Image (cartoon, rainbow, N blue to C red; front, side, top):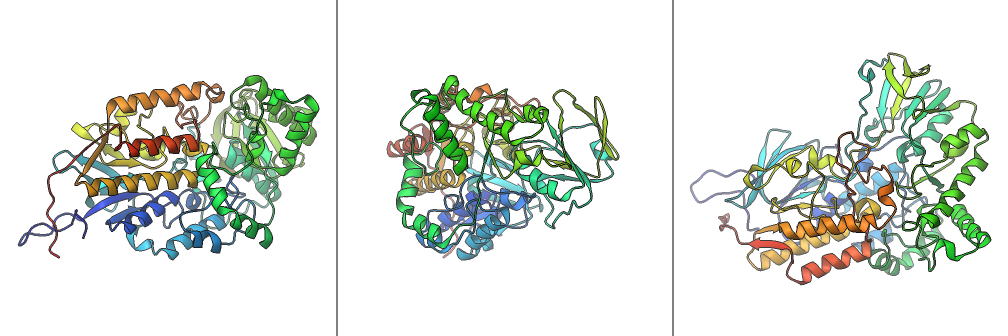
Amino acid sequence: MSAFQSVSGKGQPAATEAYDVVVVGAGFAGMYMLHRLRGQGLSARVYEQGGDVGGTWYWNRYPGARCDVESMQYSYSFDDELQQEWDWSERYAPQPEILKYAGHVADRYQLRSDIQFNTRVDRAVFDDNAKSWSVATSDGKTVTARYVALATGCLSNARVPDIKGLAGFKGKVYHTGHWPHEPVDFTGQRVAVIGTGSSGIQAVPVIAEQASHLTVFQRTANFSIPARNAALTAEEREAFRKKYPEIRRFAREEARNGIYTELPDRGALDDGDNERRAKYEARWNRGGLTFMAAYNNLALDKAANDTAADFVRDKIAEIVEDPQTAKLLQPNNHPIGSKRICIDTDYFATFNRPNVTLADIKSDPIQEILPHAVRTAGREIEVDALVLATGFDAMTGSVAKIDIRGRHGQTLNQKWAEGPRTYLGLMSAGFPNLFIITGPGSPSVLSNMIVSIEQHVDWITDCIAWMRDRGLDSMEAKQDAEDKWVSHVNEVAQGTLYPQANSWYMGANIPGKPQIFMPYIGGVGVYRQICNDVAAKGYEGFNMEAAEPLKRAAS
């Protein structure tokens, strides 16, 4: 039986419902965390705001929603039977298929019995004396747990822009991150899409096929590479499955971003113009995120980066027929890859359609939303429906919505007021027994998320097992270890071109949010080795201690 039980001593009433671990979120991180905890004989309760598993893939149902990592790699690796049995239909799986996969995993491992859906975690308070957490949920209940694991996701807190008059719009308003569960038909409607990040770039071509007219409001042009999506053949799936041991090993140990691809052996300026262009052309024709792996210095050297950026700008000019529109769609204010690079299906070609207009809100900003129109500084554009493709309060937004109080009543929001501070992206000093899965200060959004999720969950559950074997109940990041890690994360980032972009990696899309580079850019393989070394040294940089013994339930 678990050491932390929900029953007090003999003859006394049952105490508050108690678990070894409370997990917040039932996306890919929360599901795997629950599976691992069960395997260790620990009691766990998962609270999920949505009506089913899937996390970001439960909420993001907008037209054209797909993963930007190839489906054969964007999948769990912890069970070979699972990865051998599931048939992905396309190179890049569409949202409904990823959600179906998440449901299959929940069914296969019978996870739903320990997940409470349609329930938010509103508050979590650490009790210094009991060395445990008190967790309050939106259904009015409070439970206790030795540990809390935040599996809240990096891209799950949809950002609704603060535009004057938005609440008074008489047509339908949709956010790509909170899309309705029933299909939306834009046939015959005048539609405005505000935002041209990844979700906007995926949605625009699909909406354009339905709408009578589509106006795309762009503040910042984005680099995007064609996905070249296609159906997977049985032979392709089988070939991939046979190589899974090497693919997974490479993704964990050698890849910077957790994606299997051939590694470049040279910089962009080491090749002549013709050879370099041929390499970019080959990557462009193959499609996908590996375009940025053509050379090994594109994220480090501005002159090298310019060669890739110029290539993509030239491609946009070739595709888009109207020169003025093409110019507006060519990004020129950040190095390619320093914002999350997008992959698309016919995004740029969509602007050749007669029913699509690009509105540049950098030169002509949106002033307000009228009941039936969008008013910019220079004109009014009548619309029947608004699609807000305005992204997320990334990395920290979902955590910030929970009132988390650690030692001495300090809130995590107070501690992170100047930007998030963690040790290894896993824990934050002053908040014992609170684990963050793919938190700020870890590779997370710069990587294949499932590779990073599995690494974090394995590390956390191995750590809990190590502590239990030694009678330890409390774990907390040391302040000096956290300070050194934050400095290291920033130092590594400053050695790259990433901080040159006003990106959501920096928190730049949220007014008033401190601009600190949040993910760890040192690479998935390097980061894994650092975490392994910390564990091998008895969890160096963490304080651990035994709590007061908790009374066991009668067996």
